[in-house]
Image 1 (tube, rainbow, N blue to C red):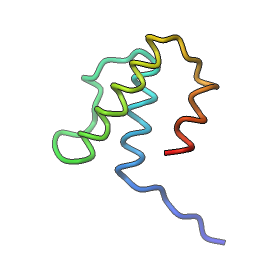
Image 2 (cartoon, one colour):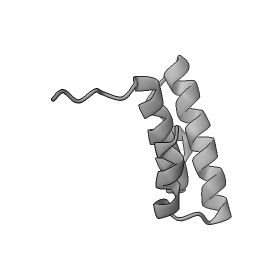
Image 3 (cartoon, rainbow, N blue to C red):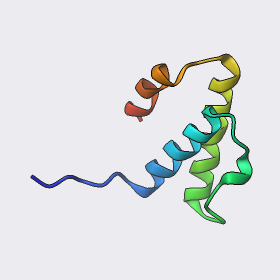
Length: 67
């Protein structure tokens, strides 16, 4: 059975979210331009917001799975 890769844009959002949730800086964005950078920064911003609210990583897995 073949496994499908997740969309690059979706992965960018998830990686940004994870780093934002970890309290990392937005300077860690691996994308220089384009839609992937925009989605990464959106994910980072949302993760940072959840980090400030004190959400645990266990609770946020539900948030990412519904994306």
